[in-house]
Length: 249
Ligand SMILES: Nc1ncnc2c1ncn2[C@@H]1O[C@H](COP(=O)(O)OP(=O)(O)O)[C@@H](O)[C@H]1O
Ligand SMILES: [Mg+2]
Picture 1 (tube, rainbow, N blue to C red):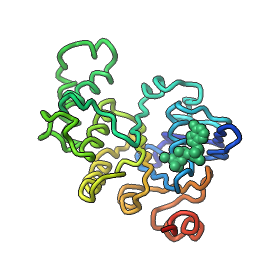
Picture 2: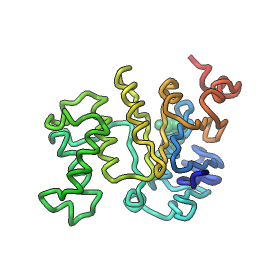
Picture 3: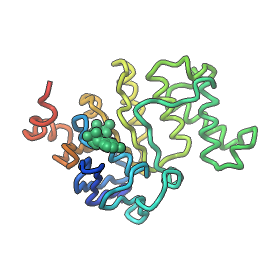
Picture 4: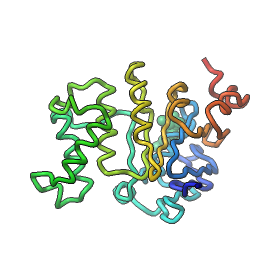
């Protein structure tokens, strides 16, 4: 069965002053898919995520969730409430709190303001905290202060905090940047556990081995435009992609 569309970006352009960061960009990400966006620095990858999450307004074009909800008219908080979660390049966890408390805060937040004020988690929330700790592989580290975690563990914790809200769309900007090889390999496993029929994942990454292991489909951006789209193997063999991106250094 063909999955329905989670994210629909249609003819999107973003200009900063006179500079075109994105030009007439169209892409569609279905539920159940992990999509990688690759391209050189400055290609417009982060700008695309900024538009999807309401941080940057399109100059023209459309961005829809489920092909029905027009995201261009909503602010960042409203877009987050719709179930679009984003991890930025730098992890931002509460360093002075234990790992488990970080996840608890995220679970409460996902349940609204009144629930967040309650001092104790209900049974469902406690269960969600355990599920998240298991998924991100940090159950054994639950009592450690987040500030003492390795860089990779902090990234997983932040992904866990996003997961608490059970996002329909998960946007990950360079999740393995700065990770050791072992942490990167573990992150492959994590992304595969995050994938679900009712979730779309969009991951921006420069590590092509990582991309080839997690992505169902790869979109190549070049100077704000789609240069190509296909499997990692197809994209790897595309002469234009090799010329402008993969062939360098
Ligand atoms: N707020 C902004 N104002 C002006 N230029 C910007 C802004 N954000 C990004 N840019 C420019 O847009 C281009 C795309 O940036 P970005 O989306 O961050 O690329 P990527 O994430 O692919 O490296 C770059 O040339 C960058 O300098
Ligand atoms: Mg970027």
